[in-house]
Amino acid sequence: RGTAEGPRGDMLRRSMIERPLVTIAIPCLDEEAHIETCIATIAAQDYPKNRMEILVADGGSKDRTLEILRRLAEEDRRIHVLHNEGRIQAAGLNKILRRAKGDVVVRMGKSEREVTDLCVEVLERTGADNVGGAQRMKTRTWFQRALRAAFESPLGVGGAAYRSPDREGPVDTVFLGAFRRTVFERVGLFDPGAVTNEDAELNQRILKAGGRVILSRDIVVHYYQVPSFESVAG
Image (cartoon, rainbow, N blue to C red; front, side, top):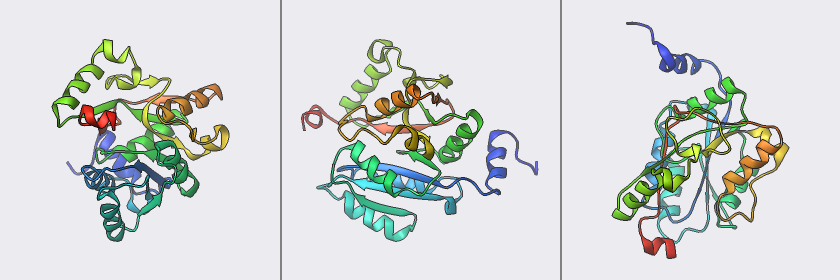
């Protein structure tokens, strides 16, 4: 057939219209094993390339992460590397938000090609302030496989909706997230003192302010947990 049908066809038609400017936000630290693959999947997104910027806030990596990022930034002018003096993710995200030009800010890891467009589509369709997909874990080591088994167990996750790939609709938080830029003007940035769970804390402020957080089964993003007991201790 000569015409595209369904959601994919809708995305192709939308690509012919000017889309919102999107900032991809990536805080990182010592990620030489994954950062190039992560950036490659983001750079290959179906979203119009001239409507996307990629901001990476590095927290002072001691491995080859910065070397890889600088090379990638030379190859793709959309990529900008920022120094995150605060080291933790919340500080890195705030650094990105202060520099971001996008109307939509998408916190992203290794992703499928259509994720950015889907995030924008779900934001537009639902009117939500933040949308995202389930937390899907990738594994390489036996320790990661054990963690995945625990996190995919009802006992391990306690019924947390953001870990359910089949769930659709309003939730209390989502993994990573795609935000309307205006929500940060209403509720503030990430808590700079939050070493963990900075996303859940921000989403609680969004809900308290009358906003909406939506989980979509169509948004697929993956992540790797720490590879070993030693990594947890470190």
